[in-house]
View 1: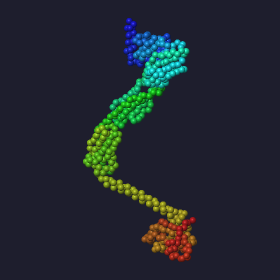
View 2 (view 1 turned 90 degrees about the horizontal axis):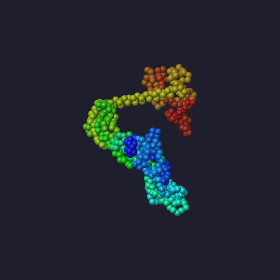
View 3 (view 1 turned 30 degrees about the horizontal axis):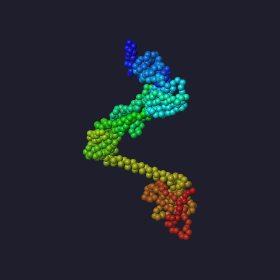
Length: 546
């Protein structure tokens, strides 16, 4: 009846194995070997998903025997054996083996030790005896001798520290040596070696890829914080350190094929583990559905217009080489290689020779696709269109140049005829006869002898200035009486009596284009007298008015 009752109690609990993780047993004191008559307190620790206030029943087992059902989660053990516990909605915990020894000397070890932990071993003597010295051995080799402390500490234990341990004690006051029983200690992994998973396992070019670094923490250390990082050969870092065990690549390409791996690290204690490399081969998609289009649409253009040939494919991944061809001549017009499903070829200005049938081809290394031929027609001639453009440009250029020349002549005229240097002849009324005096402040017209066959007329000649000569060149528009006469210039030394003008100036309009004042040079050192022509040509130098 008791057996059937036990089965009835265990059945509903074991039927809910997937509901909650199994609990973990902790020990106080932490040793699995103690002397007979002592007690060890066992605690059944539920996982975090359980709320402690909601757990109303705990079951304890010694071997295959059910000890009892109690409301609390602790049990005092005094008998050797393997203990387990269970809570409602979970499977039984892992077993904890306890030894209650009657030996004089025992080696005490903890129940579980994980990589990165500090492994503590204690050599304990029974009763009131005291140890004078202790030796610890590992797999038959002495690894430590202590005269003061009875404990052996191995910091940052690794899987290599697993093995068979024993202690040798020397009692005070006698020469006896005692050996403890051998204890096998297995250092447990804090987390398993990671395994990299790629989804999808055979990715295609341009598609997303998910990388997942799979590892498993031990339940006893489920609160340990782990960090993850991902790599690709040769040493390409795909992510930074992160708490997430996954990373997604938005697009993968053929050149991304290679070995991938991940690294998992526990911050405290400092442990790192690498996954095995995983070969990833990126599959390419052949190009297909090539299509040639024109801009402007329809392929009908006027001579001189811009033509764009657009080549595209419906499918295809990776770098694609696009090329454009003439169907009638077989000529290749150009090619482009780019990571795109569309490319353009531009003709800046078409002429009659560009008329014909065209097609394009696309190749990405996985397949080749050719478009249907497209007809391009060109109307008009480039010569006429170009002549109009050239004529318009030339006319605009000549107009601009003529306007610049007119402005330059106007500004030059303003400087020559402005006030302050030669006076303003436009304000002065020039005397036209011997009986008419010039207006005050205006130049007196002077007629000088002809020099080198040219008749020269000068105004602006102040009297009594010594050997000064004023030269002025004017462009004169004549009226009916003076029609046919040329522009005049003359040179004559000052002072001189101005004679009446031989030409009526009433219907003239003069513009000054050149003016200068010179002084006669003294005779040379040899006292030679120069001729009249030499004096006229060489005996004067420029003099600036004050």
